[in-house]
Structure formats: structure tokens, C-alpha cells
Length: 407
Ligand code: GAF
Image 1: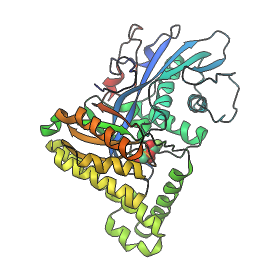
Image 2: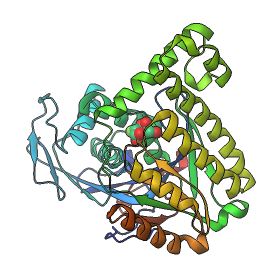
Image 3: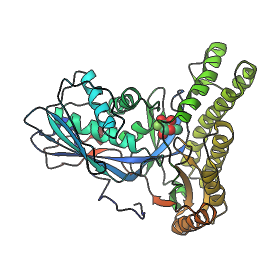
Image 4: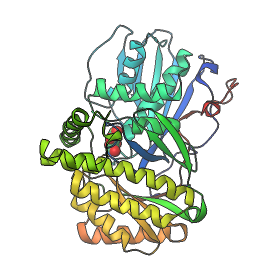
């Protein structure tokens, strides 16, 4: 279980119920975690591999039916409330309601029309920290609306529609990683996802000496947003290089491409596109190696891959910053640390550290002290184990099958 200075919502792990089995007369509560990514960064919009896990922060979406047919959105975290009628197709408002309304729009596009509802969102996922608060809201909302509408969708479909809500309504150019892991994660496991095929494998985090380690997340408190320009610029540069490689070698995307092919095409793309692609292709390879390190239960090998991944993000993808680089360098010198790197979209946000269980609390304290001395910023640290993906809490409402059974 995770410890943090923040107030924690109660459990984030628990039994799940299939939406189609829930009676719509009652309030339904859906809970979606946050995530960190262990390896494979910025690989999820060019057909690559990612290795995230769900962490025990949570968004709670509580939905209850209304008799007037209106859609009403509130949150304890934001002052704005919103009421829409069923025919409303208004564009994004550039506030928190865009995330749940974007999900509603996706359902409407599929011909799914929920009855009128009150949807209330709350939770403790830090905003702008790179642990995917937006995907957590989208997935919790999707599960709540589907449950109310008595419609069953696969985990894959829920993840895809939540991602489309963000791409098409919020206009944030994210990949599929966050929505997928938040939907499909399994406690005690990282999730290896092929972002082209949307096939996945739950990799146990308790083999061999890995069982003696924990993940420590450190929030630099430098705000990160996928919706701001740098993410989109990196994405365009990566796609520019990918287009050259697709034309030259007939590969499907960067997920298929080798470093040798990239080097052979270097003169045909901009230096920036070359470096972005080098990061992505090498990170795909690191995810494959990390899978083997996990099965071998080898934290030393895994930690080295994390450090190499960070160097690649810092130097080739150029999505780190001075504060995050300091956290990674400091971490690697602390007792018990096997590896550290920037996690998530970058340009601030969190680092993820693989640390001996016996050292994790002392490690977290020492990292915060060093960071405060250097930048006069109070970092937050979260010592955590991997938790389950999103689920529905109202088990008293006649559940006959578990969503987990489908995985
Ligand atoms: C953000 C995006 F939302 C993800 O899709 C992914 O691209 C990540 O940045 C970088 O790996 O979290």
C-alpha cells in the first residue's frame, strides 16, 4: 500500500462488477487509479511498447439517475458545475468538465444514450504531476456512464473511447497508454502493452529479488501538461521521422523499426526527428529487455534500463528539465536505489524510482531533503505497490460476473 503526506481515499483495490449487471435505480460508484510508467516513454503514438503500472491514487465517479433526463456534472475539486440536455453538442469549455463530457460524446457517437444523470467526481490524483489525472477521470466516467446505460464494453473498447475523448474533445494529442493501464491494470503487476495491436501481458513484480523492491514516485512539483505545446511538437517530430522510415523500409511504424534502419535514413530527416526516433526505437528495445529482467527477478538489470531510458529522454527526446534531472541523479547515489527516471509526458512531473523495500522510506526522505536544499521546492514522495485497474464498487447490486474474469 502506498504512503504519502496526502489524505488517502479508502481502498483502491476491491471486487469489480460488470456494468451490465448493475441496476440503474441506484447510485453507482466507479473508481479509477492513477498510473506511473516504468519504461517505454513517448512510444505509444508510434506503435511501440509501454510498461506502466497503476498506483493507488483514485478518481471516484458517482452516478445516479435523474428523472428530468438532463446530464448534470459536479466535482468537489472544482467550482464549475454543468447541466446539458441530451441534444447538446457544444464544444469544449476548457475546464474540468471537458473530460467527462468528452466521454459522453464518445458514447453518443456510438449510439449509446445514457438516461439523465447526476455525475459527481472527486479523488486525490495530483493534477499536472504526470500520473494521469485526466485518464483516471475519463475511465471512471466511462465506467459510470456505461453502467448507468446498462451497456457492456470490453476493457479495450473502454480504453480506446476514453483516449478518443481526450484526443477529439479535449484536443490533447495523447497516446493510448494511460487510459489502457488505468482500465486493465492488475495488482502486483506491471502491464506490458503493445500500443499498435492493443495486446497486453501482466508482468509480475514479485519474482526473485524484485520482490524485495518497491516503487517510489517523487513529484518534482514542476507542472506538466500534455495539452501544452511541447508534447505535440515532440509528437510531430517523431511522426516526421517515422514517415521517412515507413517510405524507405516499408515498416508499419517505429514499433517495427531498428536503429540500423534509422541510421541509414539519418540524412533524410531533420536532426530533431532523428533524435526523437532514436529515443523511441531504443526505448522499445529497453521495454523488451525489461520484460526479461522482470521474469529473471533482476532489479539490477531493470534499474540500469531505467537509467538508460532517462538519459535517452533527457538527451534525445529532450523532455526532461533541471529539477527532474537532479532528482534522478540524486536518487542513483542514495542507498537501496537500483534505478530512476522521468515518468509520463515529461517537462516536469514525477520521477519513478526502483528501491530496496528496506530502504524506501529513508530513500524518499533523503530525496526530499536534497531537493529542498537545491531548489527550495517541497517535493512529494509516494511509496507504492501496483494496484488493480478501474472497477465498480457497488457489489451489493446483483453482480453475476467480474470484469476481471475477462482479462
Ligand atoms: C502522456 C500521454 F498521455 C501518454 O499517452 C504518453 O504519450 C506519455 O505522456 C508519454 O509516454 O502521459
